[in-house]
Image 1 (tube, helix red, strand yellow):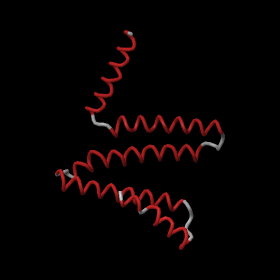
Image 2 (image 1 turned 135 degrees about the vertical axis):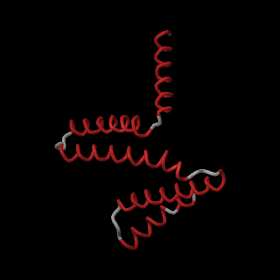
Image 3 (image 1 turned 120 degrees about the vertical axis):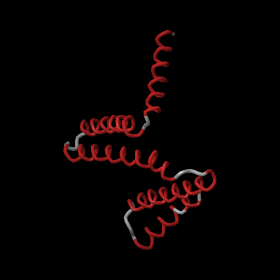
Image 4 (image 1 turned 90 degrees about the vertical axis):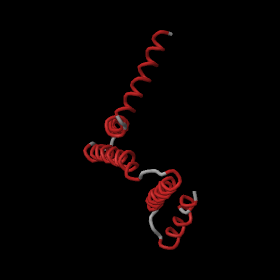
Length: 130
């Protein structure tokens, strides 16, 4: 909690003293969120015996893969397509689809995919019967 509370004073000092641009606040927020997550992971490691390597393999790496794929595709579309309202809608839809597909294949384990498929199948069967 305290780590995230530092975002405001750090951002204020950088903007007022160094006259950095406003987007730096976003960068500070991202960096402080990563630091806060590292603190949480270390706390859980010591309190409950979390294996950090397992956490990195099962959580961090899939997040990096999904983020890399989705941002690459969305930025490519932003560069390739002219800036029109129709193309922005296309990019938004492509972004959602890319995130869903990337999470399905790279962010979920096989068992998680099975659980989701089973739940959806059961809901569809239940709604078809009703």
